[in-house]
Image (tube, rainbow, N blue to C red):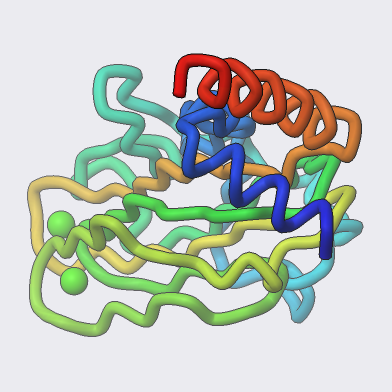
Length: 188
Ligand SMILES: [Ca+2]
Ligand SMILES: [Ca+2]
């Protein structure tokens, strides 16, 4: 409680940790992709065996991924994609950007976050994820993509994650805050 108060004070004084994300999860060629549909667990189990899956093809300029090709004529019309990433601390906030060309689902550790069934390509910007869906350790982001309209197909994920500051960091912030307060008092 005291720690939370001090953190709050530090925040008021503009002493919060750098606003840049601590972890950035981005769809890229390290994501594993497959077709046809994989068995149960592909979207919920970090230990699911995806060793037989291929690596995604990626457009590095926008991080669009798919299997084999980003063109409808050359890639499968459905793809299942997954990526395991590690977090060293609990999550404070996570607000992502996700895209489907054209439809599909997004899962985080088995939680269905997006179910896009509408029309053509859809983008979900500023999509807030409940921090309690993340765990300390290995996490799984998984996407199912369905291409319905040529000529392109893609999945896209760009997810900056801010972690809860470690206690040592919190006390450092607190020390800075106390120092600033003391100086402010002297000036006053
Ligand atoms: Ca759509
Ligand atoms: Ca399409």
